[in-house]
Length: 125
Image (tube, helix red, strand yellow):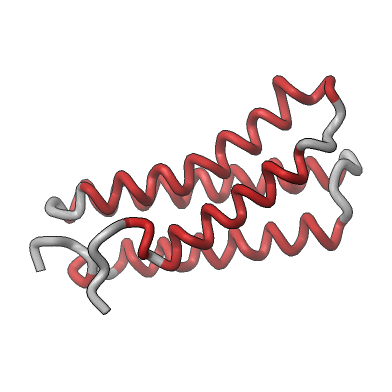
């Protein structure tokens, strides 16, 4: 199947699913975390999807495509940091935090694979 839109990418679908789970879970975070941890983890998790969409639209230019995927990778790693703090602060149960952390690690691996093989994804191919 030829992928025409960013929302058809498996990595994009996984990123949206994880971000929506984080959104639901953070609704239970303490109110004093609203403008710090809650906002940070929501922002970084959503940014992964946004960066993937931007990368897809810039795929005509392999360097721009890879750059945006790298930004998505960085946002995914940042989300892992906020997940760690969420567990350490006991806002998330450890198994839940570990599962999400592992899912972001899978996302990161997929993003790295795409960065290392841009010719398979870019419009120039």
